[in-house]
Amino acid sequence: MRNLNHISLYTFTARAIHSQLAIIGGGTAGLNVSAQLVKDGHFILQNARLLNRMDVINNETNGKGSTQKCMFERLSSCENDPEQNIIVTMDGQKYTYDQLIVASGVQRDYASIKGALEQLNNPEAPVGSIYYYRYAQKIDKMIREFEGGKLIFSEPPTKCEGIPSNIVFLTHERLSTRGVKCDFHVYKANDSIFGIPKYSQILGELAHEKGLHCHLKKRLIEVQDHKVIFEDIETKQQYTSDYDFLHIVPPLKPAAFIAESGLGDSDGYVNVHPNTLQHIRYPNVWGLGDCSSVPTSKTAAALMAQTPILIKNLIRTWKLKQNPLPEYQDIKLKIVLRLYFLSCLYFEQESIAC
Ligand SMILES: Cc1cc2nc3c(=O)[nH]c(=O)nc-3n(C[C@H](O)[C@H](O)[C@H](O)COP(=O)(O)OP(=O)(O)OC[C@H]3O[C@@H](n4cnc5c(N)ncnc54)[C@H](O)[C@@H]3O)c2cc1C
Image 1 (spheres, protein in one colour):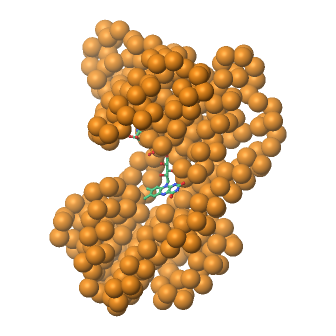
Image 2 (cartoon, helix red, strand yellow):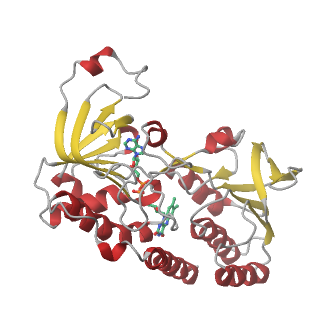
Image 3 (cartoon, helix red, strand yellow):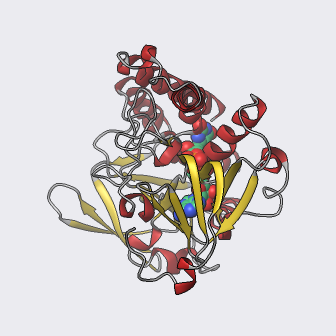
């Protein structure tokens, strides 16, 4: 067991609670896969246990919809010991499992940008972000009340470029409908407007048509009152700019327990085989959604395609004692492309909606 020094002695006295299946993360992927497993009759009530961080579960999610069919645990955080099939939550409770699905998503790292949280949490500061509901409500208000000036949209390296583009074009649409005079600037850490050349070209033309200025290879490093500092990714040179409106896309990172428990790849994502979603080292551990190492875009569209693959292989290896489905073993590209294609479709729909 690793990193137990901050867990109280009571950890070692609490009786472990066993479930056939434990799922860490009750977000889009965790709810999707658990609902499907129960619906397909693979699990009965109380054999599947969904563990989610306490601070983000609201009453509506807990006890309604698909979650009512699983035991739903709230916890502040957790640790996992895959060698012994044990999850230990921060209150010291132990959960054992036969099969584990990790679906803990990614975490927003606003704190890595100096001054960002201070400005985001200041109701008077014109700084918002659609990646967290309170900051999203703030940005909606900012758009409604904006009377003109310089807008800045910052974007770190991301595996889903559709979402940052959405807020740029939606803001532009709403402000131009109101006839507000604006100076739009988009700062991206990536070296192109969009990762797929075809879409990059279309978005580039759209941006030009709408008078949006794009600055590539620039990373936001500091936010001050009406002033931002960017760093050039290659030269490390710093640039300062004023703003009247700032949207921040936070850097995203996987939960720390994944790396700490030995489940992570070199970037800290759950190290699963991209064809089967089974963990590279632990055959009874599975991963899907944003926290997994699968090389697709990190979108709900991608995880919807991952869910049936994971379920088929989990049931096959666990209940039928067979190897993961052979049809997924030698066609890595096909699966990757299929997931990628779904993500593109999602992006296309979003672009049309803009
Ligand atoms: C603004 C925005 C718009 C988007 N629009 C689209 C769209 O139109 N189409 C699309 O396909 N995708 C979209 N996405 C992406 C999509 O929302 C994500 O890819 C998807 O929600 C990921 O699901 P997930 O279950 O992997 O992670 P999440 O839904 O984030 O769930 C992870 C869960 O794990 C929990 N958790 C984290 N750490 C722990 C821990 N230590 N212990 C226990 N639980 C933990 C979290 O509390 C959370 O409930 C959008 C994302 C954003 C931010």
